[in-house]
Amino acid sequence: MSQISEKRYFSHRLRDTNSAFLPARQNGAEPVRVGFVLQPHFSMMAFTAAVDALVTANLVQATPLFTFTIFGLDATRVRSDLGIDISANSTLAELMLEGEGALDVLIVCGGFRCNLSEHPPLSLMLKAAAKKQKVLGGLWNGAVALAHAGVLDGLGCAMHPDNHAFVQEGFPQIQVSPQAMVVEARILTSAGPNSALEMMLALIERLHGTDTVRAIREILSSDRVADDDENRLIPAENDPTMPDALRTLLRLMNSNIEEPLGIEELADYVGLSRRRIERLFQSHLETTPSRYYLELRITHARRLLLQSSASISSIAVACGFVSSTHFSHCFKDFFGVSPSQARQLKRG
Image (cartoon, rainbow, N blue to C red; front, top):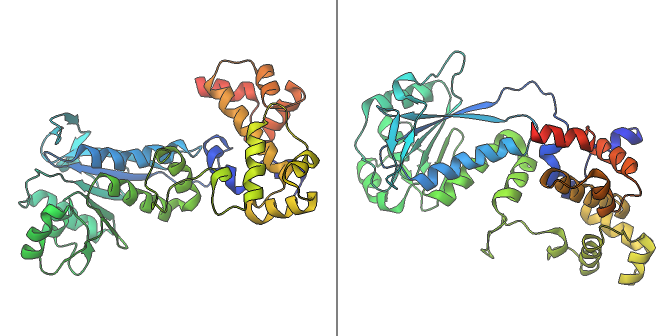
């Protein structure tokens, strides 16, 4: 691989942070089409959590991964559990399962006050979708609609605890799980807002891999505070799985963006040899110290470029580049466009 082509790739720790700004991969794949059927009094939080995962997935990639359409049962205005009306794109009668624009995923959105009685047109649509091997989902107690359609028979499902007794009594062929989320081969169910997000992330990971999900979490999970959350994101310099010396080195790099320290200076600060530092970076970050430092600085520069009106020359200085020309070359190597082009694209 040539030196120029190699520069286009970030090491794994910073790749997710920059994924939305990297040159698009031309794989020819069409976006996955997701449909949300909103029942009256649906949970707004569960619905928006699920949609947020899809919208953010599109933000962290250069080309859209998903489209979504909202359906009402009988009308294009649906009242949520918060008393806020949501405008649907279409009604259930207009939902397409084949032909151009056909859905790939169909998710029923329930809520605490949703009617649990069967809605025959919805049952027919869900049965037809199951026969066509579509992925089906239920949010909150949306799984009840799947149960009425018979598509959960012999499977496990998750739903809000308030509805467990109803389903256990009325649908003994279904295994109601105590878990907040259950992911089957073609059935995804969740019990509330937090698990709705996790359910959609499980779907995204299945379709587009762990790197895309990590990038989404970096945006959506920045304020997670639960210590036992295994998916909580931690900056590399605070990651307890990293050796103390490596975390100190990363903090030094983060604190010295404008005037980068040399490798020998970093070695003196932590009392390690240059070779030992290089081994630490290779073992834990899969890159070299100088490469990681450059990626850190170019990431900082990208944020300043797209989030401020500072001049390109001042950004170059603030991020430790010897000249704006040097900065522009490095930026284009990573992102495929010059700093001025990136700023124009952002504004466009």
